[in-house]
Image 1 (cartoon, rainbow, N blue to C red):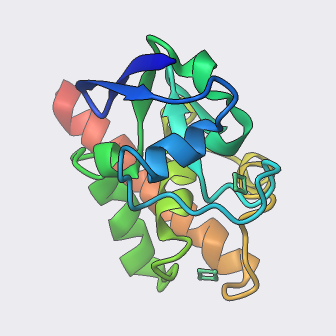
Image 2: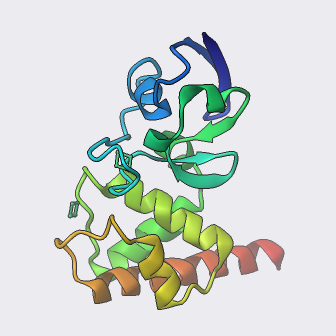
Image 3: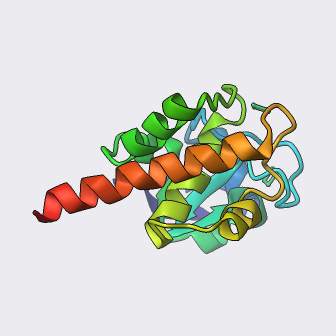
Length: 161
Ligand code: FES
Ligand code: FES
């Protein structure tokens, strides 16, 4: 069946069996390189996308549900100026996600900062459940989120002044 949706601002259409997982269409036909698919159970969150504005695991979405949806991947959000806030937070605190998990972590952080510019530790830890790897200690993660949130608040303040 033909399945059309908006992908990173462009209208696209793919021919696919309706039960195919969206993650496979994005990785295969759409050639989205940032997606990681390990578990196919919504646990690792490497396949995170914004689906009509919500951060979701694309491995849990059957292709037919994507019809007419607005989908943004890491390739889409990495063009936003706001992502600089997150990257500055990483630099300030020495948080260095590897290339494998970096897209999913930046997507998750962006989602947190879109809903709150002063997220508390509980919110962060809940959002990072499943993707917080043992390469980084929790206090560095939390410090980097706080630093990113500070830059995001400053950006909004400057924009409104
Ligand atoms: S592949 Fe692990 S959450 Fe989608
Ligand atoms: S898996 Fe990427 S930093 Fe740990």
